[in-house]
Image (cartoon, rainbow, N blue to C red; front, side, top):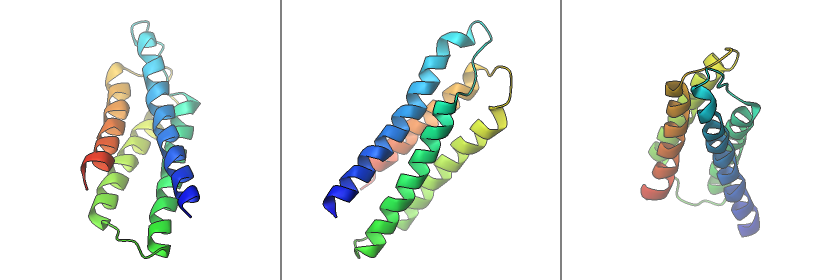
Length: 117
């Protein structure tokens, strides 16, 4: 089970990397007014959600302690990211604030995971 858990954690981090990397890759396009929400952001958010859900379910199945408040806060941050992305994904271009909000909320989510024990 540790291998499965470790694999899910790695995939969860890969999801964050896809979101963060896709957003950072669009930053140079902001100056030209051509920045968009790429599929990498959407796929990364989906990966983060599914792997996070599976990690929490696995903790419950193994009777490990779960900090429900922490999980709720992390889920709320992820939902905020998804809402921002879904609202702006069909636009011809997005501004730096939208990209910064998605990247910043992603970093907040990582900080919550690492620092909140």
